[in-house]
Structures are given as C-alpha cells and as structure tokens.
Image 1 (cartoon, rainbow, N blue to C red):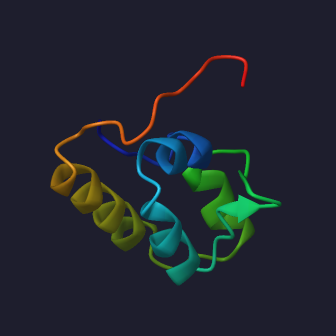
Image 2 (cartoon, rainbow, N blue to C red; image 1 turned 90 degrees about the vertical axis):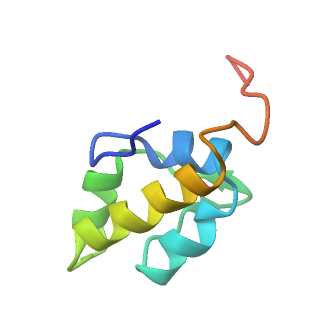
Length: 79
C-alpha cells in the first residue's frame, strides 16, 4: 500500500496501528475517543499545521514497508 496525501488517516491507523505514534509526532491526533479520526492525511496535515508533509508520508510509508504491506488487523466493512 502506497500512502499518499489522499489516503485516509482511518485506513492507515486500521492497517498499521503503530502509525498513531507517527501521526502524534507530527501533531495530528490520529485517535479520538478510541477511534481513528476522519479525513485524508493531506486534509489533516493542513488542519493541524504540519510543516513537512513529505517527511510524514515517508515515515508512514517506511512503516508500511517494514510491516511488509500486511494488514495488522481485519477491516470489517460497516464497523
């Protein structure tokens, strides 16, 4: 999975729970009330004033590659 500015925060957090730490590092509260926040990475980066979107995406993609692109949990539609 290639993570881009158009990828949703929810999708990344559900696939790679460790990504929450990366989002927090860049000032994006990826979890609210125990659930992932809505919107794309690009939208949330703008909303929370992320200065280096490329660095955020690089770290997220590095994590995805490290995990081998495997989904860490089963995503259930309608959950």
